[in-house]
Amino acid sequence: MIVITGKEFGDNPQKYIDLATKERIIIKKEQEYLEIVPRGKSIPVNPSPSNDPYFDDPENIERILHSSTQIAEGKVHTLERKDIRSFLGLD
Image (cartoon, rainbow, N blue to C red):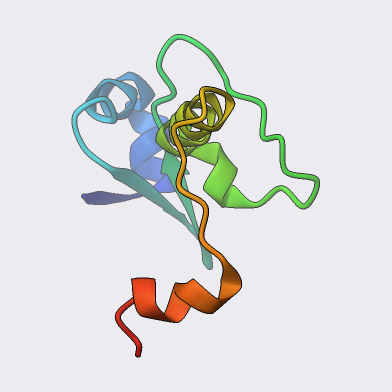
């Protein structure tokens, strides 16, 4: 992770944009921090009505879609409420 000032970024933005593909770049601007986040070849739309940052991570979206496919294909296990504690090893 590299933390730079807004001036450093302004002096050489391309350097830090290129570097962001390899490591985390944080820009300190007065009392706040901004982060350069690589998104690949598309910009995902956050489907959360509350703009929850969990949905900003493409890996999280991919996992949700994968799990939805498993559900549609019946590749799930259903537990009765009474069996959950036992399943979790809490009995």
